[in-house]
Image (cartoon, rainbow, N blue to C red; front, side, top):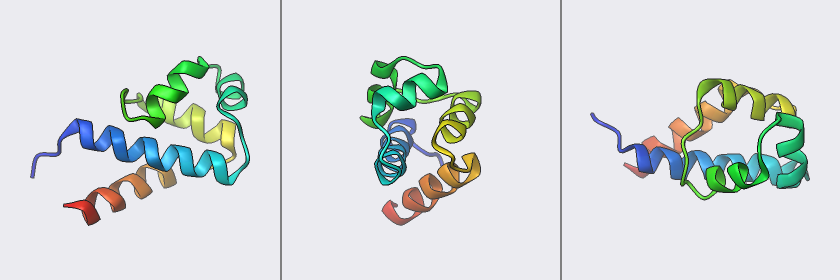
Length: 82
Protein backbone atom coordinates (compact mmCIF):
# COMPACT_ATOMS: atom_id res chain seq x y z
CA UNK A 1 0.00 0.00 0.00
CA UNK A 2 1.38 3.38 -0.99
CA UNK A 3 1.29 6.02 1.70
CA UNK A 4 0.52 9.65 0.91
CA UNK A 5 3.45 11.69 2.25
CA UNK A 6 1.17 14.65 3.04
CA UNK A 7 -0.85 12.47 5.41
CA UNK A 8 2.34 11.20 7.06
CA UNK A 9 3.55 14.79 7.50
CA UNK A 10 0.25 15.84 9.07
CA UNK A 11 0.15 12.93 11.50
CA UNK A 12 3.81 13.30 12.47
CA UNK A 13 3.13 16.98 13.16
CA UNK A 14 0.25 16.06 15.47
CA UNK A 15 2.44 13.57 17.34
CA UNK A 16 5.28 16.09 17.63
CA UNK A 17 2.97 18.80 19.00
CA UNK A 18 1.42 16.43 21.54
CA UNK A 19 4.76 15.16 22.83
CA UNK A 20 6.14 18.72 23.00
CA UNK A 21 3.13 20.09 24.87
CA UNK A 22 2.97 17.10 27.25
CA UNK A 23 6.52 18.02 28.25
CA UNK A 24 5.61 21.72 28.56
CA UNK A 25 8.22 22.75 26.00
CA UNK A 26 7.63 25.80 23.82
CA UNK A 27 8.36 25.73 20.12
CA UNK A 28 11.12 28.26 20.76
CA UNK A 29 12.77 26.14 23.46
CA UNK A 30 12.52 23.01 21.32
CA UNK A 31 14.06 24.84 18.39
CA UNK A 32 16.95 26.06 20.53
CA UNK A 33 17.61 22.62 22.02
CA UNK A 34 17.37 20.86 18.66
CA UNK A 35 19.39 23.57 16.86
CA UNK A 36 16.52 24.27 14.46
CA UNK A 37 14.57 27.37 13.53
CA UNK A 38 11.33 27.95 15.45
CA UNK A 39 9.42 28.47 12.23
CA UNK A 40 10.57 25.02 11.07
CA UNK A 41 9.07 23.49 14.23
CA UNK A 42 5.81 25.26 13.40
CA UNK A 43 5.89 23.98 9.82
CA UNK A 44 6.48 20.42 11.06
CA UNK A 45 3.64 20.61 13.55
CA UNK A 46 1.26 21.92 10.90
CA UNK A 47 2.22 19.09 8.57
CA UNK A 48 3.78 21.38 5.99
CA UNK A 49 7.27 19.86 6.12
CA UNK A 50 8.63 16.35 6.43
CA UNK A 51 11.66 15.90 8.71
CA UNK A 52 14.76 13.91 7.90
CA UNK A 53 15.80 11.05 10.14
CA UNK A 54 18.51 13.18 11.74
CA UNK A 55 15.92 15.88 12.48
CA UNK A 56 13.60 13.34 14.13
CA UNK A 57 16.48 12.20 16.31
CA UNK A 58 17.41 15.80 17.21
CA UNK A 59 13.81 16.64 18.09
CA UNK A 60 13.43 13.52 20.23
CA UNK A 61 16.70 14.17 22.07
CA UNK A 62 15.72 17.79 22.70
CA UNK A 63 12.40 16.66 24.23
CA UNK A 64 13.87 13.75 26.19
CA UNK A 65 11.80 11.39 24.07
CA UNK A 66 12.57 8.27 22.06
CA UNK A 67 12.86 8.88 18.31
CA UNK A 68 11.49 5.42 17.57
CA UNK A 69 8.47 6.22 19.71
CA UNK A 70 7.69 9.30 17.61
CA UNK A 71 7.82 7.20 14.46
CA UNK A 72 5.85 4.36 16.05
CA UNK A 73 3.08 6.71 17.22
CA UNK A 74 2.92 8.23 13.75
CA UNK A 75 2.65 4.78 12.14
CA UNK A 76 -0.03 3.63 14.61
CA UNK A 77 -2.18 6.70 13.88
CA UNK A 78 -1.63 6.28 10.18
CA UNK A 79 -2.81 2.67 10.38
CA UNK A 80 -5.91 3.68 12.35
CA UNK A 81 -6.81 6.41 9.87
CA UNK A 82 -6.76 4.14 6.82
